[in-house]
Image 1 (cartoon, rainbow, N blue to C red):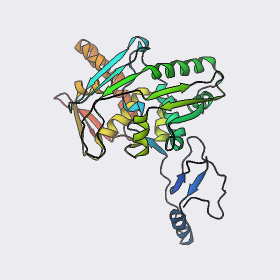
Image 2 (cartoon, helix red, strand yellow; image 1 turned 90 degrees about the horizontal axis):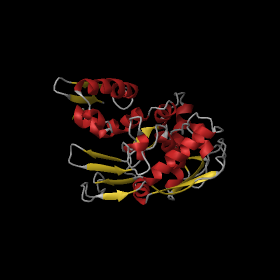
Image 3 (spheres, rainbow, N blue to C red; image 1 turned 180 degrees about the vertical axis):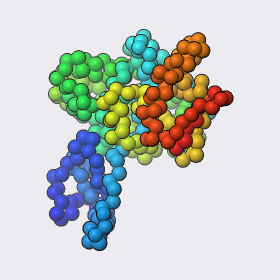
Image 4 (tube, rainbow, N blue to C red; image 1 turned 90 degrees about the vertical axis):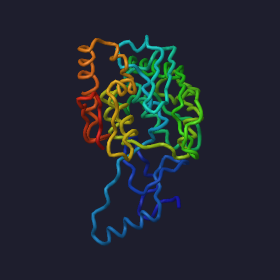
Length: 312
């Protein structure tokens, strides 16, 4: 049932980053929140019995298929000169990214997070999101009036548009097996307004939209993702999704440290002398993992055998 119960304002709209009350559904036809009658009845019963209201779950958005599910940027300082990335995973699958314009910058994960979260309702019915660049920057706590911020956003979206991805990691939803190599771009078209205050349009690849509509996507805590995005922590943002996905419902996720570094786009550290490699891991990887600890996982450590493991 779609509608507004008596006593609730029918024009109460959800703001960007605001929590959606438990049981409320986002209508694909408007920007307002609607509520299912069964959940509303439960709420009134709890109130009549003097019980405390149930806690409101943190707002979430899909993860798998999101650009941030892949290590699409190089974490070195020379992103513009990095034009390709190849990762071989422990299960025999692979990922190849070609970026002729260079890899996007460290703010890029935040741009995509805002697009996906704010446009989720529209992607259920359509293949594009309409949002102004001012809104994207403002949501991330960046000054939308800054010409430099707008320039960086345009540059990174331009680089993202030129990206092509080749992978055999997608699992067929019906057979549960991997049978094909997919070639795709996550963004197939963009219309960026000359004026950042005007609406721009971002068209997503049909592979991503198909996964979104059929519910194959896992979900992440939007508030925590936004906190990492606003602090400019792209590696921690990626690790949050990466480790949460691999832990799943398992009691432990374990991986050789060398393989883990390749998985998360830090494979360049393996080409350094041992001492420098250790320094890079301590300076880059461990601080990012510490930011995520308590959210995507409870504990992590590296054993004497060179394995890194995570506990949920």
